Image (cartoon, rainbow, N blue to C red):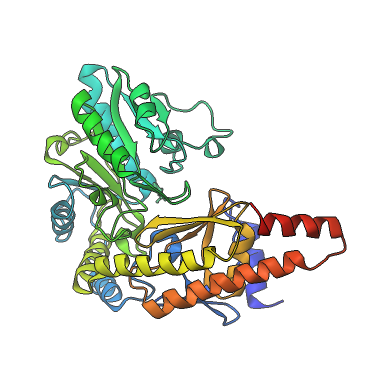
Amino acid sequence: MSTSEQLKKLHDRFVVPTYAPDLLLVKGRGTKVWDAEGRSYLDFLAGIAVTNLGHGHPRLLRAIRQQSRKLMHVSNLFYNELQPKLAEALSQRSLGGKCFFCNSGAEANEALIKLARLWGQDQGRYEIITMRNSFHGRTLATLTATGQDKVKKGFAPLPEGFTYANFNDLDSVRQAISDKTAAILVEAVQGEGGIRPGRPDFIKGLETLCRQKNILLFCDEVQCGIGRTGHWFGYQRYGIMPDAIAMAKGLGGGFPIGAIATAPQVADVLQTGSHATTFGGTPLACAAALAVIDAIEAEGLLANASRMGDLFMEKLKQVAAKYAFIREVRGAGLMIGLVLNQPAKPLELWLRKQGVIALATAETVLRFLPPLTVRANEIRKAAKAVDHACAAWVAEAERPGPDDETARFKHLRLNAE
Ligand SMILES: *Cc1c(COP(=O)(O)O)cnc(C)c1O
């Protein structure tokens, strides 16, 4: 048995099967990763929008190495040298208020939910409106906030106080508002829900609605934040000012850290004793996040994300024009989805054979989230690989198999709407 087969066996025996991995990756550099057999791949997933600087970025490695030698963790019972600096950096690039640090996207959204409840309690407001097809995490409260039934199955009873509206449909949000509504939580660009950018009139309309009705507006920036769309945060594409945002994924470039950033008017709602987390904002995590912010600025990665996003979008549209089973290419910056007329998982696997890693999401969407450091030649290579993967898929579907009916059916699905 090969080492990788042994490891997979060990994994299956001792790791709870909440995921179903199939590829063993052992090292990475820049946009490239290698599997245990020595095959290399272009990593156009970046650990789901996490390794935004690519793999092994020198600035991030140096920051982690130096800080780990100096001080890793002291708890939030003490000041540390880096947490205030990171809070300042995030505040200056977002809403101008204060930050709370945690460890994940779900935990950041939990903090927003608790903030909304504390803020609204005197007025009897506690309901939070979220969007259908949204994704906010897997804790009990955040899976309840998530607008998808599949993450809720089997976990009843769910916490109360969540209502749902249709994304990009302002009327549906208006109808969901009651005198108990405390906040609206929205992704400016839905990620897991299939890379759906918010329409400008919708996102701006939410802000107006919230101001009129005295409701808090929260943006879940866990996937579309930290430069992903060519702006520090996805909401900034729309020129709005939410009351608070949640972030995580790309913030530490691979080192786990989450945060909320608030606007001044709600910066002191969460008070001493009202919320806490042991690992939140350790010197080590903050060193990693500060290095990510430095690198994004020093290397012009916001502009690169816009430019490379435009280039990839253009190239993918050329590919899409050749294949009837591709319905649409959509996204913002380096958050791009190829929308198919059928499940996208097979294309994910065909693309893998062409040496590119991407991820099927929302059933029919192939999602691309390359690092913000991605280069034009890598974009062109990946687009070519998508073309080849599509061609290989069609060729296989057209080859008459043992069951000719199935083959003909597959052929029809791939070549016609
Ligand atoms: C991934 C994601 C989350 C959950 O983040 P975790 O770190 O997995 O808890 C929340 N919101 C959005 C938009 C996400 O993409």
